[in-house]
Length: 373
Image 1 (cartoon, rainbow, N blue to C red):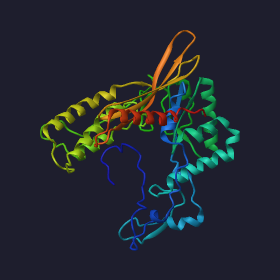
Image 2 (cartoon, rainbow, N blue to C red; image 1 turned 120 degrees about the horizontal axis):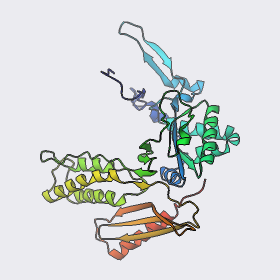
Image 3 (cartoon, one colour; image 1 turned 90 degrees about the vertical axis):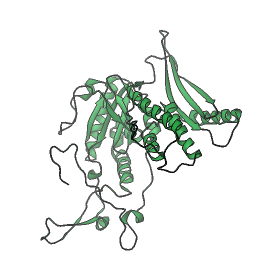
């Protein structure tokens, strides 16, 4: 691979372990993927909104920090030669490689083992690693600066025991960004404008969550809009908490109409539907200006109330849960916690039945209320 000018980001080698051999088998086809043993993305993001002071980091080169058992290294052989005239050399990979189906599980399992082996010496870090890790990304925090400093110190100590290093620290508290253990200059001592948080954007200075949606559709007259481009744009709207579910519902309704019309992937749109889609795409850019409060509670709140709402129309139904926090001073904080929307089926369904579906959806959402670490 040749680059002219500066390389924008570090490069990593990804081995195609799904490439079939002459027998039709590949390494990935005979490997067990191990399953998922970490908490779901929804729960991790939800807990992240409970901490007044947020703290984000990730593990540096996590796969390269995990050794493969010596008896298994023959399965990770590669052949290489420096030039066309050199003889072929065979190498064995000693550590987990990108591209194998079991790599994510191995990373998760190693973190679980680290907590079991050394977590008793770092209780705050052990709790955070067990519940606030998504692969190598950590989204955690605490209610005050002192607790967050303790948490950070314990996290650094725990991962040091496993031969790992946390880097790319971000927080809405400047004091937490000082004295970070980094050597590659990837940390700033000032609060960043925005940073990625498991697919969402976190703007620490405003302590808000945001979206970065780039529509893969041109609104010019010469651009051909089809079902393929609509699906591509819809898939770019990543909203695991349902914070902008009305926007996603709009896109899904257009997609449903395409299926109803039985259009092929490359067929042109009807004029009316094309105009509707272009208006939607033009509107998408305004989503990037939204700032949704990350911290959902209120300091010194008297109590915490969860309020659920559900409703339906002929086209879709939705359920949403809000958190309401009153304080001694009379201040009241109300924030959307999460929501979920569904498109009504193409087959005609009565409004009362759709409202019942919305109520069932709300009941399922209520079971996902935020849990304490």
